Length: 328
Image 1 (cartoon, rainbow, N blue to C red):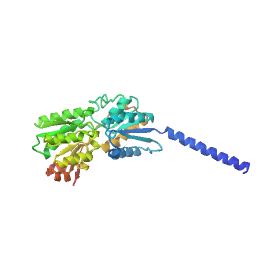
Image 2: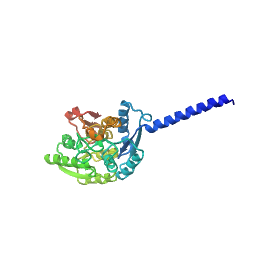
Image 3: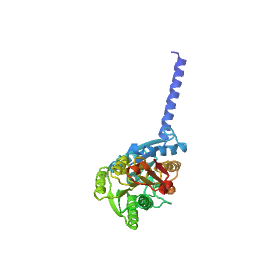
Image 4: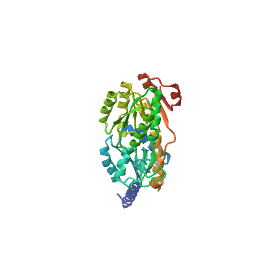
């Protein structure tokens, strides 16, 4: 091999090496977004994709201009602190939390990494933020205002069960926002002279006991407060309700698609989609403390008429006409 050939080969190798070094530097410079859910990967998939779509609409290309590290608690709150530490070890630029379990865990582990709630329940009442207009600290995002809808959910149940006198509320006291949910539901039940049965769910194993408690005390219907633990068991909960002829109302339409009777609340997919706006602003230099917490302005009523038929429950036509989603 001639000296000229060796020289050219050396130049080419140097160029390749420099190119690889530049690529490595660029890869190292792209920000990593952490995503933490208290539920399962399968159940979170649609909402995570909505968030990814929101990023794409703002010009982010996963793997090139931004990286995404997602972690799942599998409905086990005790797993979340370690997952947060994993994300901290990756030096994430921001963490998106899918639910209150995740937000609480991240808040305990860091006061410096920006946090965007994709779905928060009463963040002011639970002490997550100082106020909606001025969050303060390192947390902002979106609130589902579930507690403000609690009375409405009971009213919707009474429309399909006119003689409702005993309703069960399934909730998780460990979630700060759920306490207000419980109090609002309790107040609404009292005003309508309906007995409210409180059933607490902390772990997936608690569902069997919850089902037995409703059956033994002859609840006529039940309300499920937003709860990441229950969210991972949508099919199981819907199946129990159908089998035991129990009308139920949920906060999210995912339960209705899984076979539940009704839901009333904001779209979780839409909230995750909008969470990308917050992430974009933070990556461009905005501080969470200066970004007001957003509240939804549109609430969806979903009804599963197949389930109503199984329950032998006639749904008023006026209610069907008001529904945003009707499963025939």
